[in-house]
Image 1 (cartoon, rainbow, N blue to C red):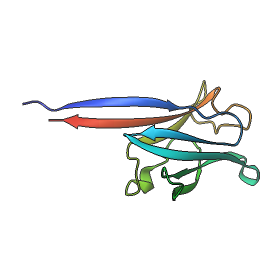
Image 2: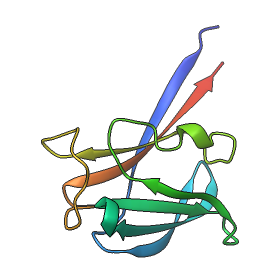
Image 3: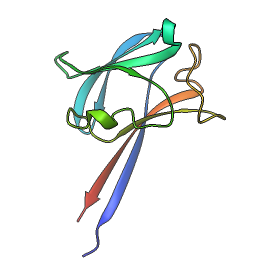
Length: 112
């Protein structure tokens, strides 16, 4: 029997302003907090469980990497990444997060 991999990509609806919102990933509800870190000139995300317990904090939203890679043991699994339209290596600026700078979560399911 062949194995198949199903890939789901979901855009995280982050606005270009500091905010707190909930987002289900992999069947679990997470609380997200995004904020602008002025000294570093970048957006940062904190992720907590549905009860507000911190899981991941202070992750800069920069392109070119799995932002959750070093936190695989915490949850939500999958790959969190950032892409800026027309320049995949650019860091999202203050005014374009969620507009031309997008945050995505990709999950992969292996079916035997």
